[in-house]
Length: 396
Image (cartoon, rainbow, N blue to C red):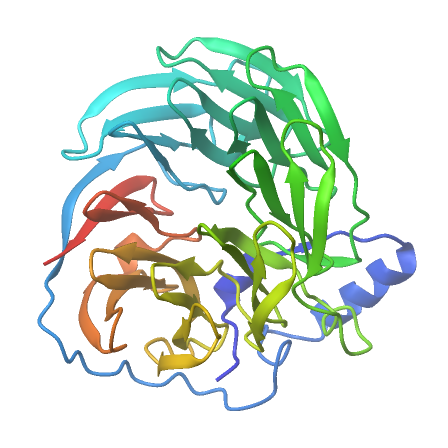
């Protein structure tokens, strides 16, 4: 099943490089009343949800309002027992991760634009990016520590390392700022293809490095302090003749463990690389709009056809495959205790047993729809909904 619903059109960002490409894209769009057939012309029927075979009870632990409907895709951040959730209008609500009670609030200064890049949080720093290319850092008390200019609209949550804040711009540039002063340290510019997937890459910082996926199907390992590219690996290679066929954006946040980093690309592969050298360990032909997950044994991914899969972390061999979302777009995936939680475009959260792939429980619904990934928070996962709520979901 390869149909993408109308809701998925918001996940395509058209970065047009010439009038010819713009005209061709407009013609392609005007010729379709829906997006059915953009990515495949195969079976277009949405299958009934498979039965639940486990006894997990999926419920709302708590929920908190952020102040009205969301018009942009933002996800919360978790640090030090607190949850930081931004509304696109510029308010940042700080919540207790156990109860959802409001602890405090922060506010993007007037004139800095709408929050477009989500929230990142560390021990004593909270960072957001805006559609006016502003990167704003707050201290733990909510005061603005610094504000600096990126190259363009900030499109995903920043990565925070020991000495740097690294952001990804809508123009393909990766920019680093000094964590204390906000002074720009380095910038890497990558030319974007004519079309890019709106489900953007999210940089991940660990052990002095930052890992960033690109719209050209690459994964970069960058020295977070100097900007030196340690290695560049290919997650996916463009195929086909049209711009749509050649979309191979690396999406979501790379999954990192002690030895490897794994990434996913739309119309491409799930691939794992040696953390230090960047050599390919294994890959599988899986097209995804979400980043993978990794635990002590397996790598987990949900593909654009709605199949959730577990792969052996060392070899890439298939452990199990579950068609839990056949025909339904997955908007998020995260660990939830012994389960992998997956949310679909209709707002339902499904929990799948990590070991067997069996569907153990299901909950929520259309009032909890979200265009962003699930975020693990202690014993819960967080959903930031289109209606402007942060919801903590538990499975017992």
